[in-house]
Length: 188
Image (cartoon, rainbow, N blue to C red; front, side):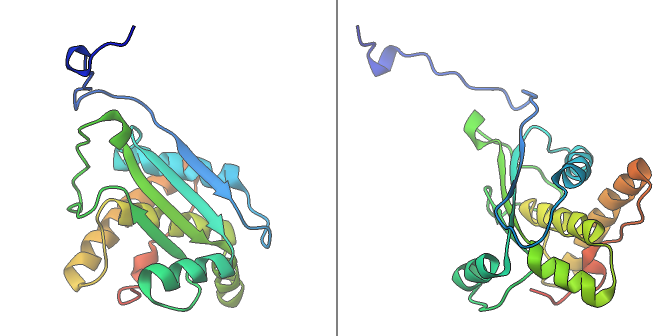
């Protein structure tokens, strides 16, 4: 027996409904060996620090060809890059979390990491690949939360947020990570 739409019960989760959502890390490239467990640990710390454990987030690791295609399609820049972020909630003010109306809106979006690009940058600068990968992913997550670096004021806010997150990762893991935005103000 079918129940008429007018008599169906609609379930709405209160905004205080707390749940732990997923962090999906996909490695779709096969050029650079990748330690996802290390990245996952650092991104779980990041999610806790940002207060977004109740939101889904995807981190997709891709090669130069794929990140170049995405960069050309969405930013009209025909070149590989280190990170692209695609927020689920548009026009977020930095520092404010989304307030989803429905359970399926507990999603921050996706961060695409140009793993091959990052690796080659690390080789050139003689930096630790896994450290830079973590810092770049944190940078991408900050973009999902409305942080940008288009102006000096925007850059300052993003730099402060990245510093806060990386200090927590450093405290927990004993790392010495520093923000990507410390030298990337006019990057985008």
